[in-house]
Image 1 (tube, one colour):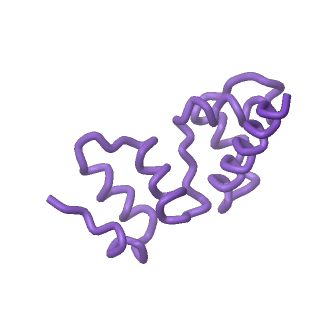
Image 2 (tube, rainbow, N blue to C red):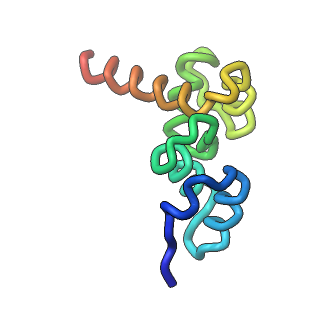
Length: 100
């Protein structure tokens, strides 16, 4: 079948999550990335993303890689922009490591 993402744009995050999770091959990581980057939902947090666990742990847990639950707790003060905060931390981390 076909998926009309534009038709889903006004839907609440929970409805989009449920619809995308019904698609074979889509898991939590994929759905949260689609919400954050595809739909521009700043509160979508791909907390199962291993690189985000590492990056957020670098800044907020003395370099220790976080679990998904720890990452969510660490970014809770930034809600409803926790996904956006994680994105900016990852950009800062990449830029820092690109420049030595």
